[in-house]
Image (cartoon, rainbow, N blue to C red; front, side, top):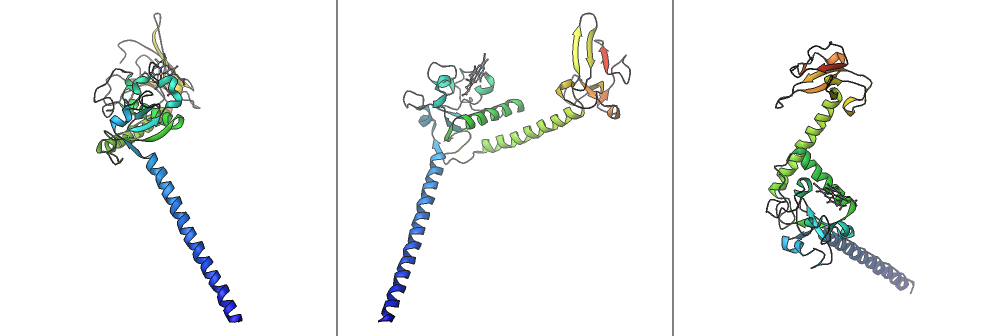
Length: 258
Ligand code: HEM
């Protein structure tokens, strides 16, 4: 009798354990499925004709794309609804107008940015960051930046490479500014042009003043006035201003000085 009872109890435990395992597997399945769904929803791939319907009229919501990323901007409808200043951007990818301000561009090139300058491209990235922070990201637009499956196109790969170059150029320029900060400049009829250095000229705050020098950069026809600390005045990129003492922190520049 007690053997049967023990067997019954053991069977109960086995059944219970199996039930717990099945439950856990099922729960995991549900979780995975729903997170996949969220992923799929987030990665919705819009066709241009899909996107164009989100204009606040055909569809109540207002959507726009920046660099192929689609955002729901309905909460900013004061900027984007029909008749408002930035309605141009709605239902399309008009990325280029974010830096050109050409809100009449309906050409196929209105999302083409590779020919823009580094400054412009980085400005566009700042815009995209603003949209990411302020609005809801709803997917990608199939076209220039993403393919029908939502994967990067070769154009996007090229853009990413250009962005990397632009960022490193910007970083190098910043370092150069720390090393040789720009001078202050002023012009008056009486004195002509004056260049001078202070501990904060060029917006670079430092613990030295420096002396004005002309800096020649390859590819630029005119030299730039920079402040050089005394231990760097022999740099081959630099040239003294005529009629100005080697160690003066202020120089008057005649037109034919260069
Ligand atoms: C290249 C030219 C320009 C572009 C591409 C541009 C783009 C934009 C965009 C997209 C927005 C909406 C931002 C958002 O969704 O929060 C905006 C807002 C605004 N823009 Fe412009 N804009 C330009 C020029 C100007 C100019 C010249 C002025 C002023 C004379 C101006 C004044 C404003 C103001 C006041 C807002 C509203 C800011 C807010 O409510 O947060 N914009 N601009």
